[in-house]
Length: 84
Image (cartoon, rainbow, N blue to C red):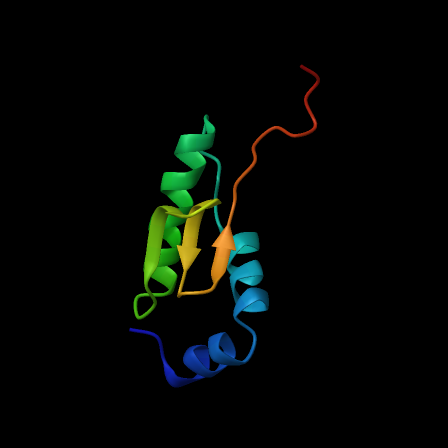
């Protein structure tokens, strides 16, 4: 479970808190975008055990790789700097 300081930090600035977690996330074993999505999903579940995280969230025209809590959308893009 998250300790009281983590809960307060997440509640005060959830986007900033998730941003700091993403920086700590190890992507070394990820090859595809789906690998990245699954890895981040597992990592966020470990770091935020008291927070609902939904994979492949969709409602109406809004789609996202992950929904954290009820209001933070995470969309992953891999290899954006590669020429195609």
